[in-house]
Length: 115
Length: 109
Image 1 (cartoon, rainbow over the protein chains, first blue to last red):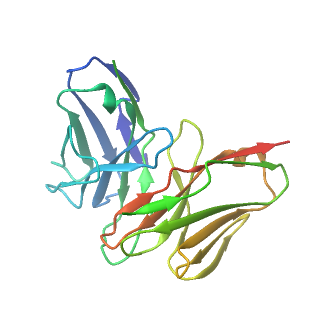
Image 2: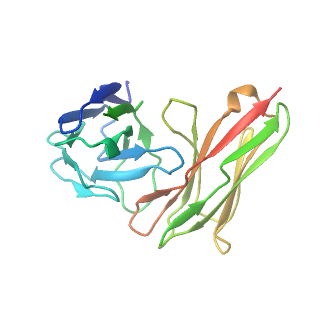
């Protein structure tokens, strides 16, 4: 099993450009998450999904959109990139369940620089 | 607001023991996680505590006191490969993880 994979691993964008980050998991997990990680700060939740066809906003959703058309894939889109979106983006997934806490499995990350 | 506090950086010697503290204030509590993150890599799960007390897993142990809003991660017999950041995260009443900024642990020979 590959676990959680992310594409691309690195990207440099100019201000105003758009891009899509792809996350895929082969563990049949229901829940998927997109985080950003910035120096000196904890991971911050951008958007998440509790199942195919569902999405919800996290702590810092502005400037991002997501889609979960297939259970195994979770896409994160930047419509018009800004330098403030320079960050490392992690995708994570976890088993179904709102009645207990499950560990999250993380992808390797995408390092995005916006100039 | 919700807050997770942990030291920014700690230094320890190979073979020694180190304790990394985490204090939290969150809206609700559904458990506390510790993750390890090596530089340039993804976080990986270390431990989960939902009840008070100590959970031991090999060289790593994690302690929780819900009444004090406090946890620690104890690493014994430190090895150079333990040099990493250690992230404390609390699951709140909505089952969302609130993350601390992480503690960078430097191991010296």
